[in-house]
Image (spheres, rainbow, N blue to C red):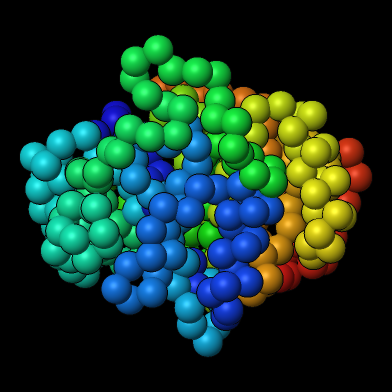
Length: 308
Ligand code: M3P
Ligand code: FE
């Protein structure tokens, strides 16, 4: 049952060198740089996104993810979910409106995998960049680099992925769309969850350490765009992880690479959709190579091991 959580709305990432990071996210990934706040955090949005930002970069000594935020439909829903998070046993912090420029009050909570998530109901909608609700043109001509259209999902690594999946399903109305299960032990190795009809809005892979970040992913429209992203990765000597290829899980067409601080990014297109009556798709852990990289059918160690 959906509970008024609409979509992944933002992710705050730590970067080692802000100016290098801005060049990567703006000129290579092709997000639009929209703001720099009083804490020197840089804000970006994809050109199809109606809210004022979706990616926030904070300069720090270590890379990784500070938190990921989901937008809910109304302030009443925000209050209801907050009460349920407290009842579930999360530690909940209320962050006042304006702490992120243009964003309303945020409800931040922890999770069994050690990741921090947020809910919020309101964010400014500047109505710029080719997404005017009146007679919109197909796309803005000034887009750069890979022309990422929107922030799509994060994949996170942590220990108690069953605990975090349970929290997201029970309190926030997420649906388990796909999973990888070790058939011998019955252990779930990966969980893909959605609040929409997308194949996933967030995903988790079991890993001994808490609170790790695997990638933030951005939507492209076509396979041609993914191949073009691969060309740009070579042109600018961006560190390539793997691809272009197809995932077995979710069936998206993808390429992974690293930002200058070592945070992994993905751009992808295509893939499955999920309605509430869809059965959970289960991959056997012994098929994990094919589940993750459908063409190579083997995992690359860096892909599994490198997290920030
Ligand atoms: C995706 C995706 C892993 C699977 C990754 C899949 C790391 O990133 O977007 O479908 O096991
Ligand atoms: Fe992904």
